[in-house]
Image (cartoon, rainbow, N blue to C red):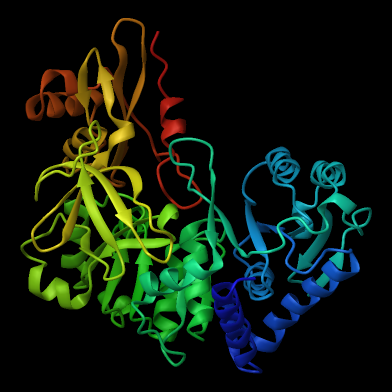
Amino acid sequence: MSDGDKTVSTTLAARLAGYGDGPCIEFEGRWFTGVEIAGYAHGINEELRAAGVADGAAVGVVARNRPPHAAAVVGLLAAGRWVSMIYSFQSPHAIARDIEQLRLAAVVADPQDWTESVIAAARRAGSAGIAISLQPPTVELVAGLERTAEHLRGEGVGSAGLRVLTSGTTGPPKRHEIPVEVLEHTVFSVSGGTAAPDDPPELMYWPLGGIGGVCQLIAGVYSGKRIALLEKFSVADWVRVVKTYGIRRSGLQPAAVRMLLDADLPREDLASLDYVMSASGPLDPETRDAFEQRYGIPVLLAYGATEFAGSVCTWTPELYREFGALKRSSSGRVLPDTEVRIVDPGTGAEVPIDARGVLEARIPSIGPDWIRTNDLASLDADGFITLHGRADGAINRGGFKILPESVRRVLVSHPAVRDAAVVGVPDARLGEVPFAAVEPVGGVPAPSPDELVALVRDALPKHCVPVDLVVVDELPRTQSLKVSLRDVVAMCHRD
């Protein structure tokens, strides 16, 4: 490991040990102590040695939001290994395919994920297998996968970090490498560097396989905080944790904000919250305003990506008090350790203040290069970023460019529309055309497709009008609660 690797890995190891017999992770109402969580991590490393896996060799984790899996990720990073995250909510065939492609010295997974096809794939790849279980608490080698193949025993030795999956919103999830020394930026982007062990617990429900869940887990342990872990988001579970532990801040995806608003909870259920952070996708102003008016809690926006190992910009309570009324559409001010510029997507030249272009960012802890996104954005004189949709999501309708977010914004302005998605679908004459799917508000009459198409026609140029629109009970979503755009495309059945 490099000196930076050692610093972060050593800190994680020390923080994990520091919980001792005190509470570390709460799951389904039960606190697991630091000793119990560290026990899982120690058991995994012991089984890796028994399987002949070299210190520092790469290991995969079929990630579930459960204490043993959280212990696996932290423990493997603390031991100075590369950790490849594998989504658990995909099919056994897809998990097996990932294992064969990743060249892993070993794979850690729950017994329910060690299916016949997954075991066979690990055997073909030469990966050792470790099963971790919550009830009963066990860490053991999988029968038939007790030894790693000779050619994989030292795979990945020499560095450490995470290979994290993107959300899979527009296509199959991809893996992005985050060296372990970059995780200090991750911690700062989540906590602002102010988290303390005696704070209320970190409320973690974002999928551990992706950047959101990993950020929360690493930031929590790195800061020595307790963590309240949910296997997945539900209004009842989230509210239980908020009320029980007096949570003062919590991240929420836009879909979760809408679910809480729809639940029409008593204000006192959320009385401990100073604010909530909304990230991972666009939150329409109507929903944000309604949430703030209903519960009296500010909704602070943030923007980040897997490539940046956390946030690029965010709102803070202080910024909200000073600029909140003036910059309602902004995703926040650029973080102190981050540089941002907006460039012309064709020429790469930097555009003027307030002009739209493609966002690029440079974070010294990640590297010296500018990282280009596919996000259209503008940057104002005060350093606040406003997003305007995805450059790669623009629909080219016979030479006319359509930004899906501009059409979506019109659709969600209808009082009976809860959420909407707009995608481009193939067209023999025009290349591609816009198609929309709409999720209505529950308990009120759903708007008709003709009514919604007319709404777009009145608000936007003719080429922006969807050629077809469907009203569905629920939009398809990924595990991180983002709308799955490829599944929306599959809803279109135009001849």
